Image (cartoon, rainbow, N blue to C red; front, top):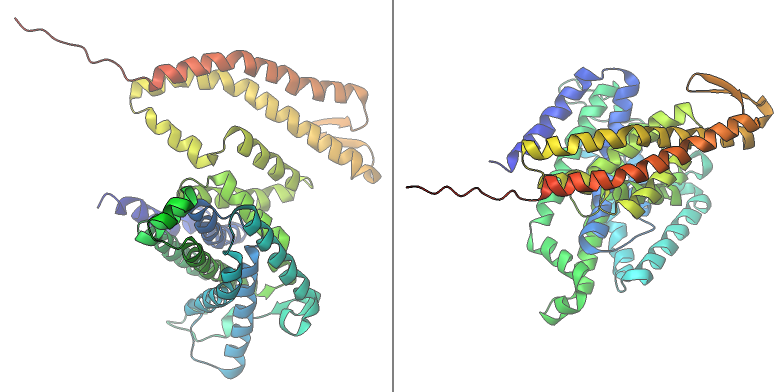
Length: 416
C-alpha cells in the first residue's frame, strides 16, 4: 500500500491540474509534458538501466509518429471502428518493429561503438525523411485529424482538455509499466549488464540479448510517445526523426537524473516548461538549456533528482533548521550571479543578433544600450562579485550540511 501512494498522488495531480491551469496554452504545455515524460523514460530504459548512450533515439519516436499519422488517415478514409485512445498503440508497435532489426545490429556492441552506430542510424533516417517523400511527406510532413476516429461516449477529442486527459492516461500507464520493468528479473539484468557485463556473461546471461530486449522496450515506448505527439499536433514533419529530438531527450534525462526513476520525469517537466516559456521571452533560450546541461553534468551529475533525494539524509527537523540559515546565506549571491549571467547572455544576444533593431534595450525594467561600455562593466562585475561572495559562503554551507547529516549521539541515562 505504501508503494501505491505516489501513483495515487500522480493520478490525483493529473486529474486536478486542468482545474488549476485551465487556459488553452497551459493545457497544451501540460500535454507536451505528458508525452515528453514517456519519451524521456523510454530513453532512460537504455541509458539509466542498461548503460547505452544513444544519439538516435528520436528515430523510433518519429517513426512511431509517422505511422500513427498514416494510420489515422487510413482509419478516417476507411471508416474503421478504431477509437482514438487505442491509436497510440499503433505508434508503439511501429517503434518496436523498427527497433527489432536496428536494435539487433546496434546492440552487438556497447559503449562508444553503440553510440556511434545509433548516431549513424539517426542520420540515415533523418536523410531518408527528406528523400522518401511518399512516406514522410517531404518538408510539409503528413497532416492528419484526430477527430475522424470512432467516437465513444460522445468524446470527439477536439477540445484540448480531452486530448490532455488522453495523454495523461497514457503517460501514467507507460510510466507504471516502465517502473514495473525495473522490478523484473530483466530489469535487474539490465542493471547488471550496465555495471559489469563480463560478470553477467560469466553467470550465463547473453549481454547482447539483454541489451537487445532493453532496446526493443525503449523503442516501443518511444513509439507510443511519438504517436501521442502526432495526435496532439495533428501533423508530423521530418524534424521529428532528426538530431534535435534525440538531443532534447538526452538533455531531459541527464538534467533530471539518470540514476533515479523520477529523474527523467523531472527533466521532462522542467525542459518542456523552459522550452514553452523561455522561447516567448528570449531568442537565446537554447543557450540557457545548454548552460544548464553543462552545469548539471559538471556539478550535479546525479541531476535534479539526485539533489532532491540527497536531502533524505536530513531526516530531523533540527537538521533542516541547521541548513536553512546556510541556504539563505547562499540565496542572495546565487540570485545575483544568475541575474548577472542572464544580463550577459541577453545583452550579447541583442548586440550580435538583434543589432538591426538598434542598440537600445530593456532588461529587468532597466533601459540601457547594448554597446555601452558602462553597461558592460556593471553587467560583468555583478557575477564576479557574486561568485566571490559564494566562494566565501560555501565553507559555511558545507559545515552546516555536515552538522545536519551527522547522526547525533544518543544520550545515555544511568538509573540508581
